[in-house]
Picture: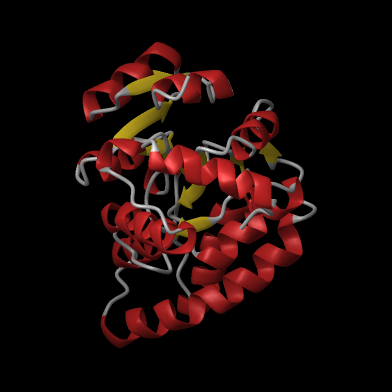
Length: 251
């Protein structure tokens, strides 16, 4: 949770009483950062060690899915089931966290998208804006991925795959945490999920929240896909902070 001077608390209360507020819930991979292939390589490496079977994992198998479902689907495709499945699911993540922490810091492919840090900072100092995370990463891996870029503390709350493997259930968890921590009640039209896949959009739509699609990968085609999934707004990169304010009717 970010530091908030007493004067800022007064301003926040003013905005809350006047109904002017917004909660933006950001996806991580493909939206704020590109982690490169390290996580996917580790999924393959560790499942191969645990099961003795070489298991493929392509981008289409991971984009927008939660880590537990990615793992379970990998194992099912390789014919792993029953007790072997259960044992692998239990043993995988402690190994994954350890190796991700060791290797991610030196991974050359990882990057934060150019516009992200300035925009997140600008939003974080707006007294009527609240920032959180909704991601398919487990909480520990989410923090490992964000920490090299120094932006993890801008997000006061989050909902993670370690809370629930069903992404559609994560936004209400994040909203509940935000309301509890900040002592604020958010209407559905004050909650915005920001993400780069149809799964990010869908988890907003099914909960009657607003969806902001980020079409980084495939230009107009990706924009069309995100709009068809129900995105209320679609951009090729994170929009400027003034655009976020406009979307939330806070100008």
